[in-house]
Image (cartoon, rainbow, N blue to C red; front, side, top):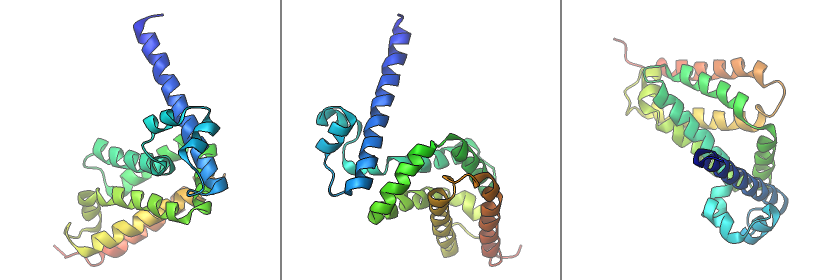
Length: 201
């Protein structure tokens, strides 16, 4: 076995262990509640030592919000990879990628966890809202308003909340592909409404 093969195997093992810990934590948060679950409980369910859990996730909060964090990070990455593209075009491409990539079982766990812990759901939604906020220049270009205009913050928050709801209620259903165009049309209408207040040049 070559050094590269050993490294690849080690990385895959680490990824599998991390995923086992995450899913065990999310499942317990759904079953027992966030406050009713300890790191020791998660370690037992994932069949690892408590110290191993902490190596992968510094806190329970990091486990609970790992999926929203990753989704939001991918949104930010898509914007960085597509400079000059329109705001809605990038969101469209990102959502299409998420629908193809996300594991339905993981989404089901996320939904169950959020339903049992509304406070976690609020934190998860804020991750997407923050990611949308970081796309300020692209959003301002879409609305036609100056970047500092307060309506951009309003639209950004609305888009973030809409995206969170979309993940929570649509992507886990079989009709997601058919709903995607309708959702994008709603976002487009939101952007178009903001454009009505943009200064005419």
